[in-house]
Length: 185
Image 1: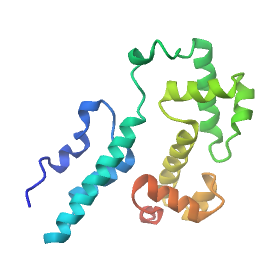
Image 2: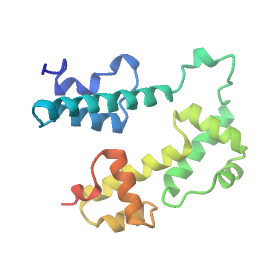
Image 3: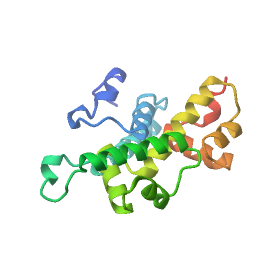
């Protein structure tokens, strides 16, 4: 079997022509593809399946990536400066209250935006949905707490807003490609 046309050092630059960073799941797939330890037919099947997984992740990631404003100017109006301030306030609220965030209705009332402007404006300004932002915030904070090594997985799950350790473990593994217990010292 031929060697891959890029080195491990280049793996994060595979999609650099898109000016979009790799998603965490794409990064995991690239690392798994590069670290294949199989031989023979098993290696061929494994690499082929990982390549298809990476293609599927890339298609999903880039199809949901924000369209450059120049292509959408006639259809969508960017948030005005007042709306931007309100949306930044929403993000600030989510950053402070990520373990137990307010509902969309409550966020809308707190910031003076209707739910449609809240959801569309947040996605336009921050290039992610509110729920994805919260998930990423929780997972990053969970990873940070686990790396400190002061608490166990159940305590971290509770601190970042999960009542169930299994749900946290599943979300963490999906986000980073490895279970949270691997970070405990």
